[in-house]
Image (cartoon, rainbow, N blue to C red; front, side, top):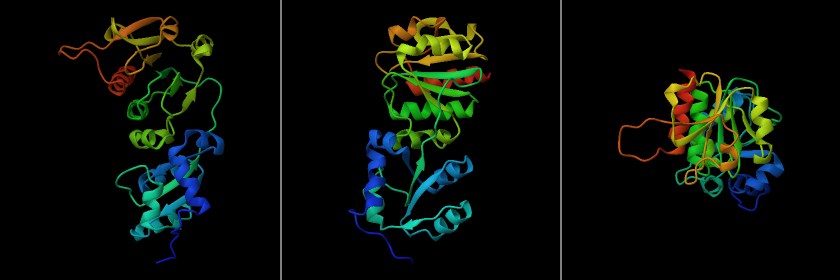
Length: 251
């Protein structure tokens, strides 16, 4: 067993913990926190730069697998893993990776646009579904949850490493929508039945969990589309709605 790092005062430890809790620090450093050997493999396969790996030393396969992936690990105590982790039941492996650098307008013909989707689970679900149904990119505007927060990364199940994510200001929405080169629709209650439109080349805006699509974004959309429902529920969770629209794009 290699010697373990045990001090919470260690600079590496403090940095890892802060990457999990501080969005501004993530932007400042250009790094984000991930948990688990599976995500480590995903990050390496998708050519993300892994900057630090913490391992609690309990599963010997972790060190072997990390070496096979070409990354070095730092053995730390389980207490340090718990100190840095953002979960109640840490997996024993934490790592930091470089944030991807993306600018301009994404290429493609199928896009999900999240307008102030605040719940990390919903953002992560949208990313996971975008990955599953070959959506070309996910665009964020307004007060969306940080796509590189630990909760979003976990909910995405690795899709954060494969699905391009872009941000834009609402003030630039008109120019962004025009540059996408496809019709942009808003997911709204009481809109047209989504089955009446072809979404194979389109962008769909999913709005905030409580307020829906913002008025300034809605005005720029070609039409409002609704998911037909036969039950008594008034609406669907934003992540579920994004998943249905993503599937419809691929149909």
